[in-house]
Length: 111
Image 1 (spheres, rainbow, N blue to C red):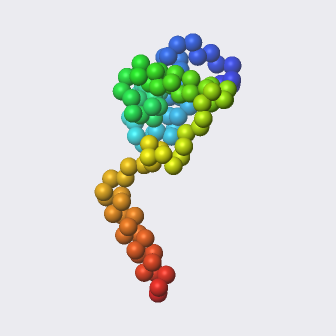
Image 2 (image 1 turned 90 degrees about the vertical axis):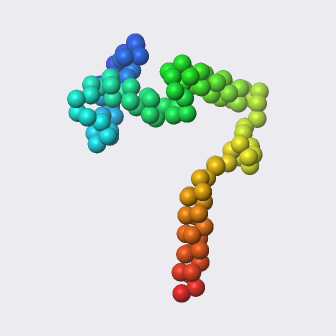
Image 3 (image 1 turned 30 degrees about the vertical axis):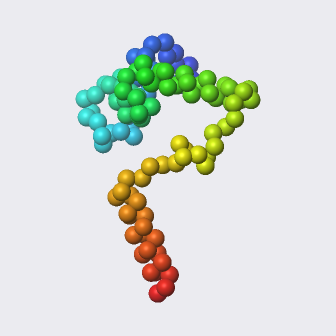
């Protein structure tokens, strides 16, 4: 059914996303939202969440695409997973929680 659907405009694409994922977001969004409004929410919240505007999202996707093509061609090397830029920065609460959890696990092993 959806394989033959033509997505010619951004509105069509947002409507398709909204119709497809409305069930998943039923608790988060009001029922009065149209499929296109649900799709716009999905794009804003889940696609390139670090960007604000649609133009920034498009630019980030283009950079990612260019990097992927260069990687496949062998023009660049893959990212080093040990580099500091690849590591997560944990907020103090999460870091403290991990330490407490590990301490509790050690205590439980001793029992």
